[in-house]
Image 1 (spheres, rainbow, N blue to C red):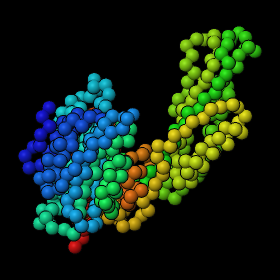
Image 2 (spheres, rainbow, N blue to C red):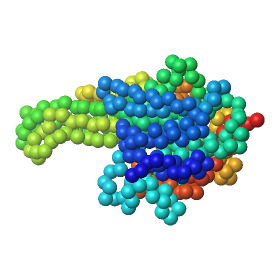
Image 3 (tube, helix red, strand yellow):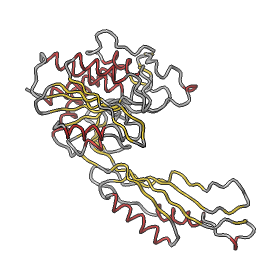
Image 4 (cartoon, rainbow, N blue to C red):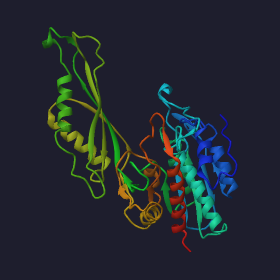
Length: 390
């Protein structure tokens, strides 16, 4: 479908949101989404820089950094134009990339996560500049990746490194992830738990089930180890954080026969952990528990994200105040949910997340209410007003 901008898109977020959704930007494809966004930002006076990055083991990814102004403070909006696959299209009642408006809702992949929020921020900037007659003290920037839903290697992390090498400084950042559970204004994310994956393997000796004395079944030992890991909670929580949690995600022996004792048994687990732990202390805890269980094992771990927190302060006050101005609600400051690119940004500046309602993200018939798009653009505009208060 045609992904060009409708006429006069800047003050109203809907035309740009529809244009972005019509770009089939399933990671790592861009589908024209960054071109469309760059056109809209260029019309508002932003200096746009495309930042394609590559890595030997992952697909090439295109990214966009756009900045309006040169002075401090530099308030940045971060997000991603890439989306997850649509899945089985037979479950959709609309074209996933058609950006149809039906019954007061905008349908399409990315409506909630997070092309709608990107369009709302552009709309907010347009309103802010109109109201300020294009004059304000500071800079506004956008850090937009095409790699958030993928490996997250050639996107935000490398963009931040590039900015640092160029002497660019971001003073505060808002990530437009869908943070609200049921209604707009409920929740701002001020941090996230870390994420560690573990691969546990137990090796035995394959043999006939009728002659167990000639074999060594690894399955009971694997179950013994997993029971030890789940026997007690990791912790009772941490200020602003839920308790850490270990979930077993798969157990597999690869055995298609009913009369064969397998040679190996494997399990994979994920731990979402709060700042009670570091990756090193968490792995030490795992090995201590497994060693105490008394079964031979092999363990490999990879930490894909460490926990971070933006303590309540100036940035969260600005966001919460803007939310109250528009919705009348006082948002909960939360660290629940999965990971996001905010984990990279937190190493450079205060960062928080606020965006659409997340009920339909990654689902069939992903959608956003038109009224929520309008309110989110209003909230983002109020955030800019509060950030650059005269």
